[in-house]
Length: 179
Length: 403
Image (tube, rainbow over all chains, first blue to last red; front, side, top):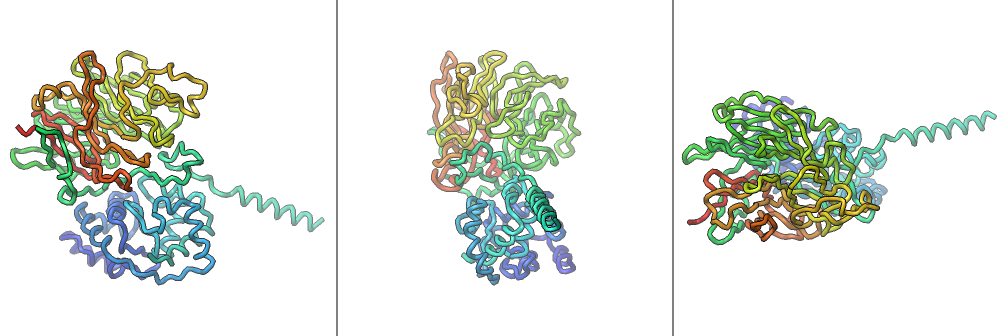
């Protein structure tokens, strides 16, 4: 928290990617399972997520104050930067049974319909392949519980049919997925 | 006995657990009405750029208008820019649908500046300016801001004309378009609460309200109209309408309608485009029961803002023509629209011409997404030029004659 507060002091100047890598990792590749990677995320996903944090559609103790300081132009600049960063190959190794069951689940629950056939994301929909395990699991649980903010209700609806086991399998499979 | 009891208790516990699953939340309203055969469809609505996009990053030179006209970027930096209305002093007010802002573009001799005028509104998509007052139609209410052009840096508090227009916070089609009638009343839509559902007593209709807040129904059976204007010659109301999704790529057409008398019903949810019975609601009905559209505009073309051309700049043949912004398809395999179309009426008020006026937003009809911009509203400026808003990028373009 202290590191973030220190960086926020100078944030009024311009959109500095170093502000983000402090938590999201070098090049936007997170090394903390609870913090999402942002490297190689679709540009429009990043701008929309930052917009949601600033406008209060999503609330997070770290992201809300960071986003509150930034303008639309800042968001566009940061999104341009991080969408162009190469996502690191995943360090997470999914359990073999989950790696085997994963593909069918992403079809069954319509993940591939929006996130793409290889779950690399598109437009305002994020890349799921290689995302951090704890983060993925927390988001899916929150969507299912109706506690994760969003603008169109799509993910809340999509998460309803997921059992706790489905969420474990999906998070494990996705966080071990390269591409 | 003990074993049988244990089994019974276990069985009861298991049943209780299975019934404990939380009820599934309804799917997003854009998925409602999908048939089982369409379950795998990857068609989806497109999201606008919530932070806007700069014109210098866009292929604006791809925009085409007829010979004798030119098109240029007029103002930018207004994410979600949609409906436009011009004030007496020339300021252009710009509403949004998915955001909470209303912008104003001030043209102070040489420098054109767009800024946020009002914040924290609820889908402020309907805008009318008349005699110093800006009227705004939000999700649930219509308000007025008197003398606003004298107070652009410190806008007055809104006065509510009518409230409670969306008591159930309906999931679909809650945003409104606003038009001022020759009778001094404000005309607006209340859309259907979903793709293909039975509307309530107020929904799927065109309504009007007087300055005291008294509501009247103007027409029914309108799934969702987000564009309307009065024919300057006949004083009749014309409006665009979005037909249902998830029927087929080519049916039903989105439509243009003319209100020629009281009590018209244009068919929704029973009949579409005046002649297609809905598979669910139109069984055992004849579409002859309902009023047909004036023009079928194309399937999944998304006609939104429309205006009759009344300016003095365009050539005489454009007088009284209707310009319609087609925001473009999502529920179609081959995308279409993404342009401004022109409708010409003949002397008796019948459709004489329906052709493109401004194109170039559509890049690849088979791609996802297929376009780089989406025209949403058209507005005739005091000088007779035509403004076109693009809510995908938050940019307004201006079409003028080259002479």
